[in-house]
Structures are given as structure tokens and as C-alpha cells.
Length: 366
Image 1 (cartoon, one colour):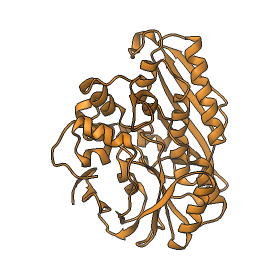
Image 2 (cartoon, rainbow, N blue to C red):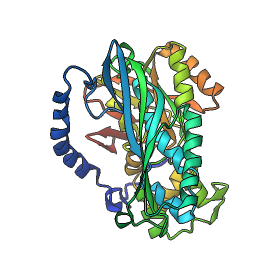
Image 3 (cartoon, rainbow, N blue to C red):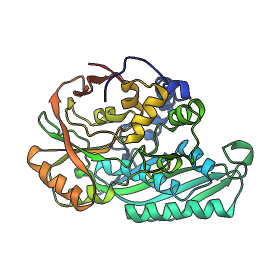
Image 4 (tube, one colour):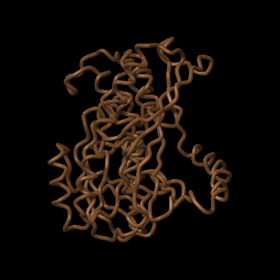
């Protein structure tokens, strides 16, 4: 994709100010981090807050991996279409895809569903999606919560406004936690194809496509081979089966990264002083070009907000790359080597073909 110097719509203008969130979160964490003092004997967090998931030390060499996330404003698209059978998949995906990044096997997830009203159709359709997501991730849902909070919810469809979040749990041996600390220059970055937008950037998507361009969700788009609404509701891919197969095979996997908000800058969460040179990114799905063209969005902003076609990254020793790719093929996942780790203590991410470099929580021209 060519780099257009024109700055069009931005994530901040759509209501998501990443810089402001970072500043506010730092204040919150000054209190949250102090809760570690309440259980110094057991239940100690192994990782600092900010990794993809955390691990609580249960003793005897076993760790409880925990992760929590929601579907976000993709839910508003579901409300506009009155179609709710995929958002449960998204909720599970957003949680388990983070959980596996520490090398944990997901076991179960609890959901919290807040609704304007306990509508039978709405709850059953959400339940269908939760079931399908659980099937794909091979987890159970042993409990959850439904809260009726009509005075707090104002969505896109009166009577069926809702929010859906989850908390996933998994197990990992403490000595096998994956932090990325073994990554060295020359290790290969393998990108696993996303299914599309996944569940990030929808505030910007709605601003550009629905508010500015005023495109109808039921309009058939030739590039997608389906309607715009169907494209936007495509569920987030769940990477659990293929990643668990890689770990079970004993391959020298050194790091795992879920590519969500912040795009490839998620790679720098891994605990090692290396940067990444990504030289062979696949062509993004048509939806990304569609959004960019409609909003005149700068390429750097696109790579910060969206996954741009790669939903998950596996960093491995060069000799394991073929085996990783073979496991992806066995699971029907398109994957390819997209770059490698490089010596770079500032931990920058260079998108070589796009002439962008990620530093200080943003992408800028290289």
C-alpha cells in the first residue's frame, strides 16, 4: 500500500485517544499494582501488568493464566443489523488469543453480559456465539453474569442494547511461561492471517464508513463478495488450536503476540531488547483499503489502529519456521514469514516496504 502524506480521519477524532488512555491508566495502576501486597505468600503475579495476559503463581510450579477483554463497539454493528450470533465468538477470541501468548492452555471463560432488557432473542443469539467460540477454543463457560442496566445503556437498537466482556483462565507451568526473553536477532517472525478487522478499531470504522461516507450496512460490496455489514461482523479468528499444536510439538517457540489495537507495536510487549524488521507483510484484506480510501486515513494511522491482515505472530528460531508453517497449513491457517528480530535496544518495529517505523507508541515515516 502506498503511503499518502495526507492526514485524514484519526482514531482520536472517533473518540479513542490512545495517548490520553495511557496517561490515565498510569494513574490507575499506581493503586492496582499495590494490591500485590495483599497476597505475598500465594497468588503473586508473575508478570507486570501490561503483557497480553498475566500469570498468578499457584505454587508447586503451576501458574494460573488470566486475561480479560470485551468486544468493544463492534457490538453496535451487531445491534444495527439485529444480528448477534457472532459477537460471542469475538469475546472468546479476544480473551483466549491473549491468554495463549504466555504459553498457557485456555481452560474456561466467564462472561459478563450487560443488557438494556433481558430479551430472549438477544440472549439466545449471543449464547450461540459463545458456544461456537468455546468450541473453537476448546474451553468451557462454567458461569457468568447477566446485568439489566437499562439506565446505563444507549446503543443502536432500543431494547437490545448490550455490552459483552469476558475473563479467560488457563494453566501454564511457571518454568514454561513465554515472555519473549529468549528472542535474539535473526529469529523469524511468522504472521498468521487475520479473518479481517477482528474486534479493534470499530470506533474509527463507524465514523468513516457510516457517519462520513453514509454507507448502508446492507449494501453489497463487490470487493467483499457480500454486504458491508457481513464483512464488518466477520468473527475474530481463534488461534488456540494451531498455537497449542506448536507448543505441544516442542518447537523452539520464543514469543507469541496477538496483533490487536496498536498493530505490530504489540511485538514490543515481548520481554527482550530487540526490534523487528518486517519485510514481507501480506496484502491486507480489501476491507482495510476500503476504510482507508473512504476516510483518507494516513497509512501510519491504519497500521496503528488495525491488524492490517496479520492477526497473530509467532517468533521462533529459524530452524523451526518450516514446522510452524506446516502446523498452520494443517489447521487451515494462512501464514508466512514476514520478517525477523534485529539488534535494536529501543525496540523499534520497521515496516520496510511501507517505509514506516514504530516508536513511542506510534508509527512515523522511516
